[in-house]
Figure 1 (spheres, rainbow, N blue to C red):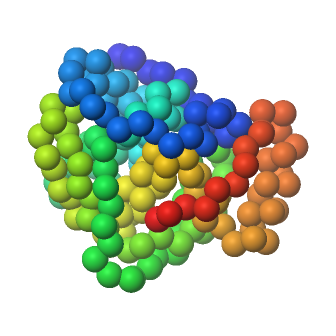
Figure 2 (figure 1 turned 90 degrees about the vertical axis):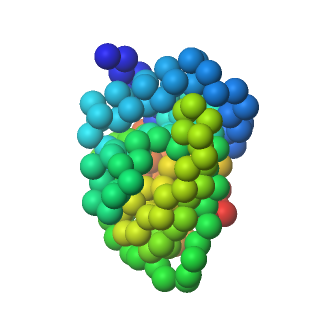
Length: 177
């Protein structure tokens, strides 16, 4: 089992847009395994490649998430589409910002298109928690963290707390999702 250390806020790789995957090979298969095993050990909902220091557009999701009838466990080069304007507001956390959970607005419904590690096209329709996870992980691939979705007052309060940590050195970005 390969469990890789998870990068935390302040690591530059978390703020850089990830590169699209161009080659579907053994190396990509190993990356997906590393992501899946690290995610399983951390007991999170999802984990993006930049969170383990790899700037590629791939993430793993917990296949046991409520609503994950497709048993999706990873997605390569994801593209999200939103079939409606319905939103959800609920608690969200991030393995790269341990111990912080904040109510975060996300779209309720999402269609995610991408590829498997072998290059096969896949499309998943997610609602609720699965939709939240797909948006959160795709944000990571764009260099965006969930704290960037907070209103100004909440974000400033959180940033003030985080700035006290010796490892914090991250600008705030606005999510395109």
